[in-house]
Image 1 (cartoon, rainbow, N blue to C red):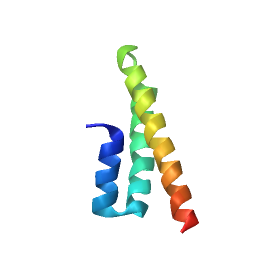
Image 2 (spheres, helix red, strand yellow):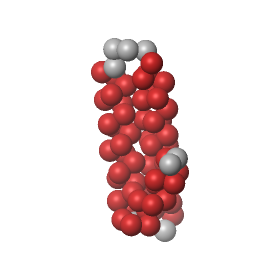
Image 3 (tube, helix red, strand yellow):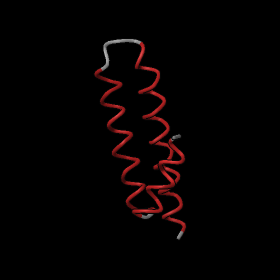
Image 4 (cartoon, rainbow, N blue to C red):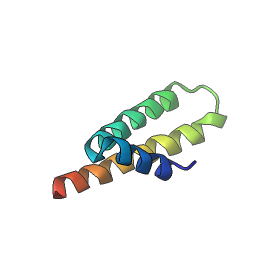
Length: 67
């Protein structure tokens, strides 16, 4: 399952406000993992995930502010 699919499911179940907060928290989770990682292999995944969820949260917050 892709992040976009997961995000859509979260929006369907919890609404856009909580989904935006989830994105921010998930981005922080991956940022913590990225920062703490000492091995090179997972760095790429953690970096991708933290940026993806951060950007998704930014976009959801823009949507919320438009309403």
